Image (cartoon, rainbow, N blue to C red; front, top):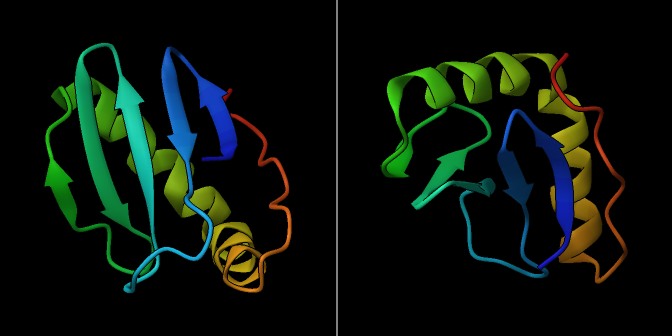
Length: 85
């Protein structure tokens, strides 16, 4: 599972050839969640502060995430995405 980005203890992953809808996986401490790229629907749980940071990052990098989703669907290596600063 390729790591896409890491910031403030939050790790963002995407699986190769994963199921639709386009999404990414988030790990933070003992929490795990899946978040859809287009509408930010969360499956799983994250603390409110971590979720706010992930949403801020998602808003900045939605196009890059979709590009990585397409790359992974084609069995290509994803590109790293700049962390939230």
